[in-house]
Image (cartoon, rainbow, N blue to C red; front, side, top):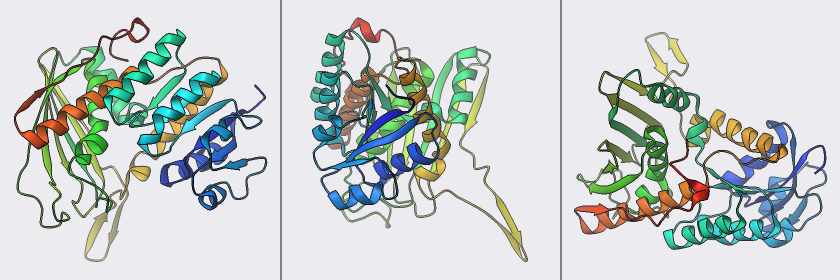
Length: 341
């Protein structure tokens, strides 16, 4: 490995292009060595002005490009399994955006493939674990001063949903973040899920069940509820309140700039996740680069990615069929003992 970690970025869409920018302008110790996207023009646009970057339409060619030491997967979810397995075959450390693999069967194949290697190569991109407020809440809960956590109350709101968004995606795309955050904050697996559907908002696209109310149960009796509302119209909001035996703690209240002018005041509200969690993404990628340069792998692992896929699938079944759906996880390989901390 050279002085800078050479990274192949797979996917040059909204997320991939932002990671190219981050690796070039924000993160230290790394450079973009290659980029791959089925749209060659989009790939070239993402790396415009960067020297020494090769552009590909085939992800395998990007992994094999000169100077590639590691891989950042930011392509659509269905392409992740193939990319992860190809990185494993080459022994390349990889940071993979969520969902690790959208379907739990494919996700389990990734877990089993890495377990056969006997060592970790992958970090999964659950960036909320790197958000300053989430990290403070995690430290508070782990410290035990508030007693045992009893409930988590969560809110996840978006201004609007993309045209392709489905009712199931409110759970397997949006609430997947809360699934991982709850497992991490509580140090527990989620064991069952129930989904309730209020009357859809008049602003939701026709046929979209939005908002939804999702209730998770955990292995030690805590409850986690999530209000997910992806066409709220006014801003991107993520909040979480932990209610414990001897107190509570809440994160996500807006502490943005307040502009006061004649006749009133206006508080800024983030409009998308790349604004709200910009610092978390920066810290996540920097931590991955630093660990990779040390020859280590840290952060959320492929078991976390698999568990999120299984829970999300149970949630989608609950949405479609009604009632409570149990979460059925496979046996966990020793390599991933315990919920990741």
